[in-house]
Amino acid sequence: MNFKYKDKLGFQILMIGKQAVKKAQKESLEKGVPNVYCTKDGVLYFQLPDGTITTEIPEIYKKMEESQYVEFFEEINNVPEIEGFKLIEPPDGVEADISLKIKLKPDVNRWKAQEKIQNIRWKYSKLDNPLTLYIEFEQ
Image 1 (cartoon, rainbow, N blue to C red):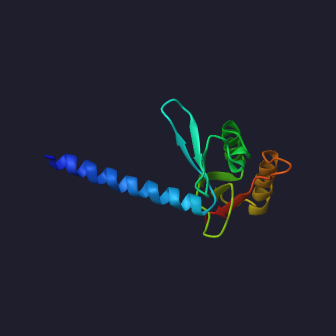
Image 2 (cartoon, rainbow, N blue to C red):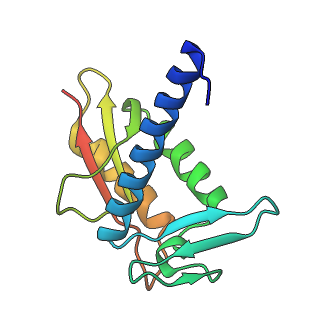
Image 3 (tube, rainbow, N blue to C red):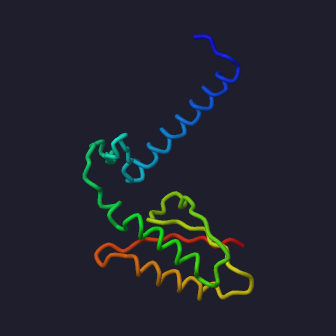
């Protein structure tokens, strides 16, 4: 095949991206989180950690509906003590549904902010399956 320089660069970038995706998929399965694939027709397939492929939504994904995540994050963003937050990967060995790094506004009570965050978490938890949250506070 005859490649131009920009084609080679594009191919290299594509291969690096492909390797990163495969690594992330492997790590997800190792952590017990199913991989999700979507067909062009919008059908979702889930690859479970044991290798099974299914269209049935796994329990881990049933904890909250997509719109509830948006509402959850909006409520977190509206806590007066919070300047901003971002989604992060939890540390190795920590299992959490949502992991956040939160930047508080200057001179606020961290414990008061954390109490408000926990109240929001409980609001979006199901009685038999509470939402788990890992929080880091930015210095």
